[in-house]
Each structure stands twice: as structure tokens, then as C-alpha cells.
Length: 193
Image (cartoon, rainbow, N blue to C red; front, top):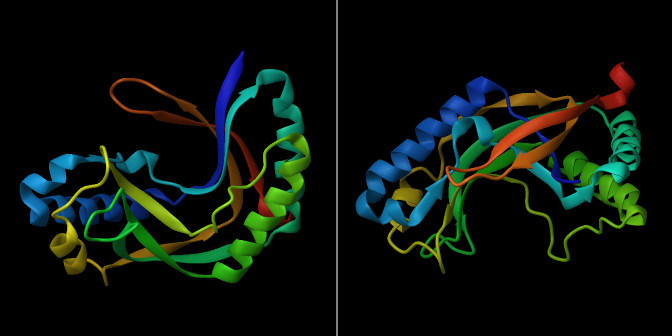
């Protein structure tokens, strides 16, 4: 059996609820153009550090050990959610996102360390540079024109922040109504100190 896995940081419920409000404001302002986007449910919002894909069940303990080591070497991070935008551009985004500020250099170092620990297990980091963001929605097809004005209206939105203190290994259960994410392992930064 294989499990579809990814490693992430999980914002608290209060931040997720505020992000739902920001996404709702984008949808309201965009009108019919928002229908081209599959919006992420609030409980599914997370900060992906590395996507692992389909992992054979017998390899999960090795992945868990790499995560535990990376978490033990990390320190808690203060992250602030600010603004929104779109990749590759706000004019025709394929991904609608909320931005991050705060301890971004230590966060990037954590992502690199995690990649170094997972690469020998066959989970190479992505080729493109990592860009910290929280995905609010994904456009169907080649992008969603007509969102630029709505994204511009929330580009400076202050959502709030949190103290990220653990790595989470999530299992993704895919379903027609949308994915459900299950936290299967949590490792506290600094070994729980």
C-alpha cells in the first residue's frame, strides 16, 4: 500500500478562519471569475515544505526519522500571514495565495535541511525555488483571468500570525469532493525543549 504524503507547517484555527474570510472577499470581489478557481477549504490550509507523493508504507519509518531529525535541529518560527496574490501572475493566476512574513530565513533553512535529509531516501526537493505561501485556491485549466482587481484589493491584508513549533507529516486522501488531510505524525521543533 502507498500513502500520498507531504510535510507541512499547520497554522492554527484562528489564522485559517481569517484566511477563509480573505478568500471569501476575493471571491466576492471577483464575481463570476472566481468560479474558475477551486478554493481550498479552511481546514486544509497549510504551508507545504515538501511534497513526497505516493510513498510505500514500509518506507514511512525512514521518512519519519528524517522528519524527527529535521525538527530536532529546528527552532520555533514566528510567521505572519500578509496579503494575497497569484502565481504566476495576478492577471491570470493558476494559484491564489496568501503571503508570509516573519522568520523567513530560518524557514528557508528548515526547508533546505529537510530536503537534504529526505533526498537520500529518494525524495528530491523541487527544481524551482521554494516560495513560502499558503494556497487559497487553484485555477482550473490554464489560469483564472479576471481576479487581478480582487487580488489587488486584498494585497495588503493583515491576517495575523502564529508560532510554528512542529513539523507535520500529512497523508492526503483524494476524493471527488476534494482532498482530506490527515496528520499522521507531529515532531516538535528543538526536540520539545
